[in-house]
Picture 1 (cartoon, rainbow, N blue to C red):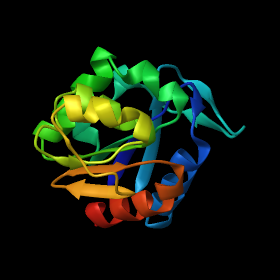
Picture 2: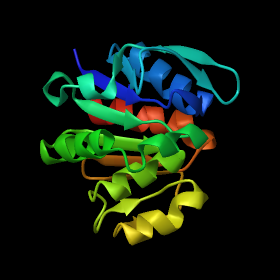
Picture 3: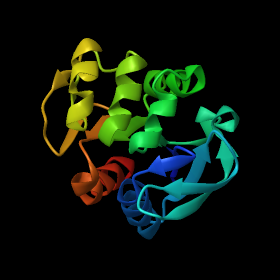
Picture 4: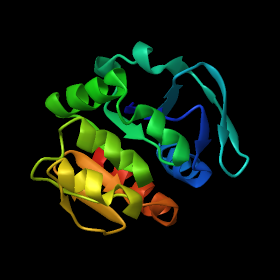
Length: 168
């Protein structure tokens, strides 16, 4: 069984960017774990709630096939978080899927893994992606090798389907 870990902010994550891709993956029998800065309840911007299975420092990349960084205003807590950045680099260097939706693409840019890669992000993160060496496309979903990025909540379903296909 394929396994993926979603990195979610403790609060103000975008509900649809978490729940929609998670449901798509689970319907395809892919095991999904949720990680954050804390264990316990996480609160979405639109009122949704979920439970964190682990803290990000407990993520062992060898246990997972993919990592998903979820967007929303709360994702900024990971922009310069050394653990979140190291995880992105490790998953990338091991040839695993590294993905982000909405503003969370800034995490991948700051991890240095978007140099020369086609990528998309919520428009507020465009300059950060370009600064990180990405070829910003503005598309809903962008796939470049083992990196999958999406630009916002309206792309959540497409993003989930792209993740699912990449994990097949």
